[in-house]
Image (cartoon, rainbow, N blue to C red):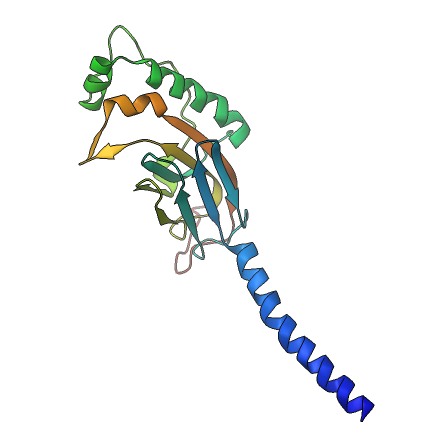
Length: 195
């Protein structure tokens, strides 16, 4: 009888632990970037397989936000990208309303030229982006991106009817949340080399 009770207790413990372990595994692999007024954080897998992931993005600010999953250009890492993005942010926030209006219409400010900064991202070789409102949650596709080194970029910016509010630029910030190294090949995509 004591053995039967022990076996029943052991089975009950195993049945209780297995679902908890499965839940813990799912939470550990979920990819999530969260933008707050203090910055942007990331949790989840940093080496996902190509074609098998999406990134949940949460905007916990009072402004609209843009999230991007962008391939890093050769030689760049989040550490080397951050100061370049900071210089770009400083320049954007220093523009007058008239200069911002002209910039939105495709005219660079002649008396306030854009700083000469290297191209940090390679947008032609994979990645995605999405705009979401204040307090919203969305999904950023990652599964269409081939293997390579990427970064999750978070920007707070306000949009109304497709146009950016000029006074919102004073709140403009951009952050590199994490480096993501996509591994393997996209399912159904073959690559060949020319000899």
